[in-house]
Each structure stands twice: as structure tokens, then as C-alpha cells.
Length: 124
Image 1: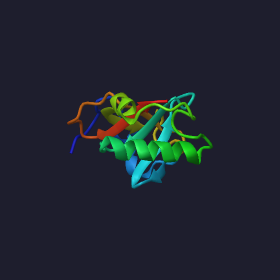
Image 2: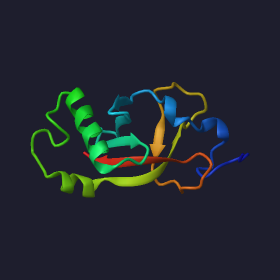
Image 3: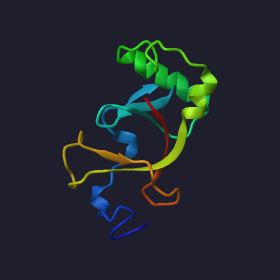
């Protein structure tokens, strides 16, 4: 177990468990959330097969009132798959034990960092 400060130079008490974050919906067994100041990214916890994560993203978009992730402007599934990024992320608070809704995420973590976890990202 890592002690002291970690990759973001934050104490351990600032890091969050990604499995219990508020704001995620589960679609086709994939946890999905819109993130960003203007909800400009769709994020899935884990690295998934492209067809599965695209289906989950589309279902999440419909759940939010859109026709699909392109809001009706169709693109072939291959194009969407090429736009997916498999990354590693950290979830954290800037202030330890802040409001559970006030979590932050960065998906530029190294794979082998103690608190990093896999994510699939698509820019909406």
C-alpha cells in the first residue's frame, strides 16, 4: 500500500473509490456518466469492448432525453469506436471528505499508480 502523498501530490484522504461515485447510471452493465464543465465527455468505468460501451453511451444519452450520443446526427459505429479512448484515471476531492457530489476526475493517470483505474472516454 502506498503511503504519504501520491501522484497528484494529494494525501490519501483526498482520493475516492470510483465504484461508489454519485452521478453514474448503469446501462448494459457499464457504469456511465457525463463529465466536464458542460458535460462534454461521456465516461465509462472500465475498458470495454467498443460495441458494448457505445450501446451504453447511447442508452445514457436517451436516458437524458437525446436521440443518441450524436442527438440524431447519425455516424457509423466504426467512426464512434475510433473516437473512444481507453485511459487510466484518478477520482479525488480537492478538499478531503467534501460533499460526495463534488468529486473531480483526471484521466491522465499512469496505469500502475495505486489509485488509478481504467476508464473509457468519448468526447460528446
